[in-house]
Length: 87
Image 1 (cartoon, rainbow, N blue to C red):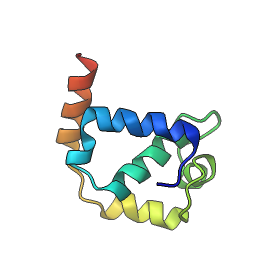
Image 2: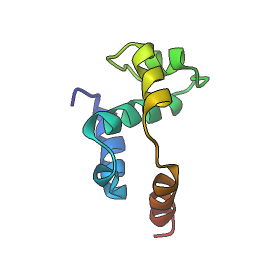
Image 3: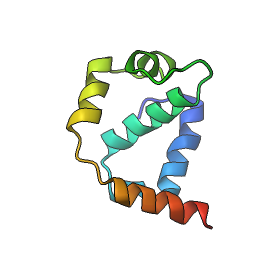
Image 4: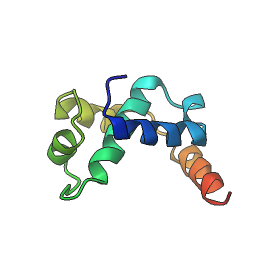
């Protein structure tokens, strides 16, 4: 995975949550870049900003397809986050 040094910490956090059991490597990669961009000062949350601030290698259209066409199991993701928070 081609990533910046601080992406390793985000990736490790996702692995701690056990998301690799539910999401593919490309999905985890997109999520790492998304979290990086959303936590960067000045990001307004638009796909243009996400693409710019996360240094994502793909075009923002790819990110748009990721959000609109990916099958999401939001309940499972929220369940995993709540488990981690309650530790």
